[in-house]
Amino acid sequence: MNKRISSPKTMQDVIHRHRFTLKKSLGQNFLIDENILNNIAAAAGIDQESYVLEIGPGAGALTQVLASQAKKVIAVEIDRRLEPVLRDTLQDFDNVAVHFGDVLKLDLHQIIAQECPPEASVTVVANLPYYVTTPILMKLLTEGLPIETIVVMIQKEVASRLQAEPGEKSYGSLSIAVQYIADPKIVMTVPKTVFVPQPNVDSAVIRLDVRANKKVKVQDEAFFYKLIRASFAQRRKTLMNNLMNNLFDKTKKEHLLQVLNHVGIDPNRRGETLTIEEFAHLSDALSRQ
Ligand code: SAM
Figure 1 (cartoon, rainbow, N blue to C red):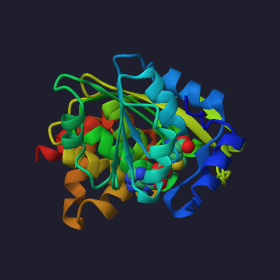
Figure 2: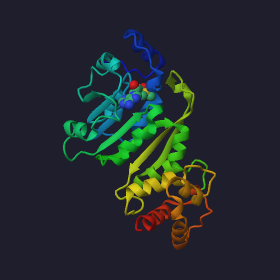
Figure 3: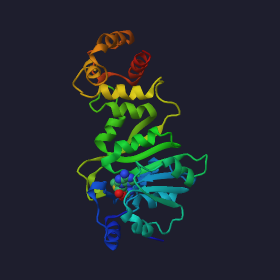
Figure 4: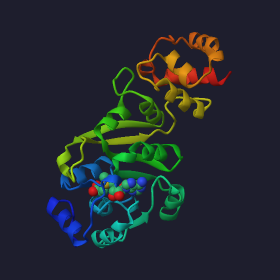
């Protein structure tokens, strides 16, 4: 049985054996704590029937744990230099398929169709590269992929934003965009010491359960997203000012005031006080015009 690379010593051995140099620019902070690796897999509820998509397997520490519990692991890694490393660390598993490429550019529909049976639903599990956390999560959530659950290690501050409620400091456009599609829950916070090299920021594991139906109904999703982004463009500004500065031209001022009045939203409120339901009402009222 090939050795697990879940300790500082075994990870260092693999890195040295392959003369691999970690790239900060690719967010290569590898996990070296067995408990954390097991806890991530446990939070995702993986069993022998699970199809798992892992973004960024790195040297394969989490991949080994996932492959030992799941039916199949599909791993997507941008760094081709890791090919010999993964061939070594995953040699005992015949249920792992590694695809090399940028997850943001790859066609995940096609990869999932190629690797999984047609009716399979996929669980995403990853220790994400922090420089692209938000675009990766938005891609996973908005492309209509057969994903039910996402369990990812991310920057703690971003995890708080995903889970935040109206009125909380970290509530913003990302909270709404994510909660519209999924139900996020922070599973645990994680100290810097479980990574090599240690990142500058604290981390957290978050679980996102994709909703069977979106949290609110909106008529024009593209406009809903635009409205949310504009409403939070400058946090200290009122909703009215943000919408006039970032979404509408001067001629629409009276009209906007009328619509806000009609849906019962005070124009002097800040975006951070509005619930997702209020944004949905406003979006429908404005996009109807
Ligand atoms: N899963 C490993 C672990 O926990 O030890 C490594 C996690 S490390 C934080 C992030 C991994 O994502 C790195 O292996 C990095 O090369 C890879 N990565 C970075 N950007 C990526 C991208 N756009 N697409 C796919 N993989 C990416």
